[in-house]
Image (tube, rainbow, N blue to C red; front, side):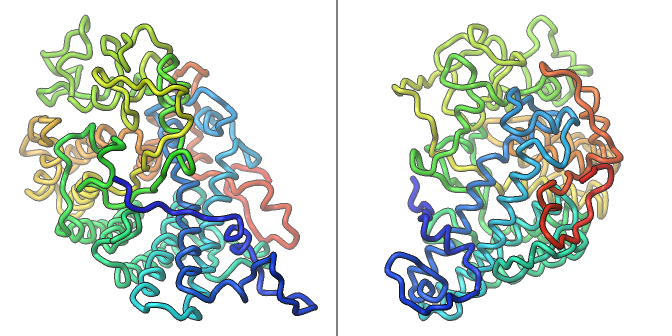
Length: 501
């Protein structure tokens, strides 16, 4: 049950872009709000931090699209902003995602900086003040880390927005990551172990995000240590893989941090995006055969190697996560035989939807939004991060096997243990496979194939309904800095290699 949601008013949105300049006439207005009149009460501080969470919602409502840029899914509609990136036809002017994510993430950073710059002036409960500072530091770190993953080095801004920030040069990725780690360490010291308001950042969320940052930057030993710390903080796997992503099971014991929504006021559109045409969806994002084919058989072997695979019944005896995540031919979706529905690849995502073989959704008219939260950090990913980092540190020791087998032995999954005696390189491939299957359609695959430097191998040449995909290894490991940023007077930005301004 949702016990807390974060709201932001138009007044607060305007406040977040208020500069520190003063009017010539110091007249007290009854219709406008400024930093001088706003930062007075505890409620003002709460509204301000809620505004930062609002920026997180904006980002998270698009995060699943990143699987459609990698080799997991297909996005049919160019105006949604990701098809061109998958095709390799993007440039500094678009599609939407190139400038959209930049804007969303820097907006969140600006709002977090406003909170950190002003909250000390508010007379309020000191423990709550400390908590809000921790939340702002955590969220700023999340936004900056995501920027480095997409664009590389960006301007590092640690104060409230000013016009002159448009003239700042790019800082190095290494400098940004160092600040992210600093923010997360500070946040971990200020945030509570658990939150009375569900959905807000906690100490575990800060340490979990730190583990991801360290992993993505190949700080293997530190990443393993951070992930191990989270593994001792009371989280566990939900018995049902499918239920982890159901609205009625939100905030379960596996969720470390998510973006909270409530429909219709702040709902996201996931059900519409990923539902098959004919059950209330658009089939905007649908699985690629490359993903479906990568689910192993229940004996733990690939479809190429297992004697259990039957080409005449190809979805029988597959890793149970397949049918808990994806509608395949021969299944029933919302009471309709799947073959009677329309998708662009012959598959549809079940994950993050209420549709399955038994539950019938009959709402009329069909809801245009859902209150389903978007999970950004969960315990299974922590286990996978630990396994990957520890394997790079010491090879496949017993703790690496234990972390992977814990995921595979989830009650609703029941896959066999990883075979013993693997080499480090063999275990590396097992972990990469397990990440793809366990975390399918959670927006992480694109980052994974880039940081493993295999994107051109797995993306380039994919034939999807829109054509043949292209990944240029000399250019596409980073997105371009959006073109409009170079129109700012006095800009010192330098574009990423391979892109013109």
